[in-house]
Image 1 (cartoon, rainbow, N blue to C red):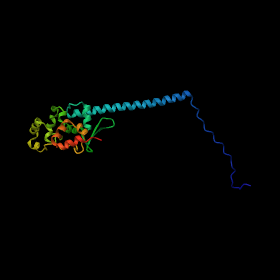
Image 2 (cartoon, rainbow, N blue to C red; image 1 turned 90 degrees about the vertical axis):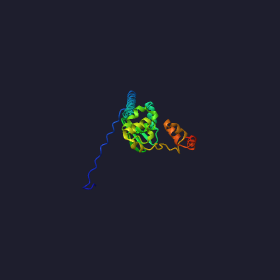
Image 3 (tube, helix red, strand yellow; image 1 turned 120 degrees about the vertical axis):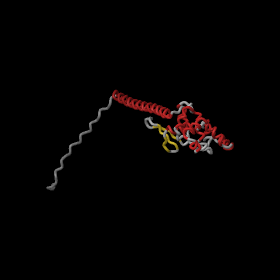
Length: 216
């Protein structure tokens, strides 16, 4: 006999069966696959357009940055950029959209134009000397040694900034490469002006060792 406080047990209704989605027909499956393929193709097209825009922006950014210095190289722009990227302790990259050139030397951010001026003074034969006169006029920070200037430019520098300032410059630039580790391939990659300079400064033994080393 049930206890007075016990509630009668009521039967629970059976849960409603889940509504089964109708199976796709062959035509519907084909349409779904077509839509998926179209979405993939659209995504690829968008990425290609972005990449094209970025590449164009990078080229325009380099052109504007080079033109802003007033320097004119004898090299095609692509070859000049490739050579700049090979300089020791130098990393040149660009922003995600390609609109900004990012230049780092020895881990420190430097302005691309200033870097190009320094490179031009160290590799004068690669540039039209007439476009370098303004560096002397303004006493560019890129001028760090007397041999950065040819005879005419030295006279111009002294006229603009005085003999005392000119004589305060060291005669030669410090080595920009580690000759103790330089290989024959590294030597061939150097600009002609740098090879000429090193040939005049290094002993025959040091030059011979460079010729004997091979890049691994």
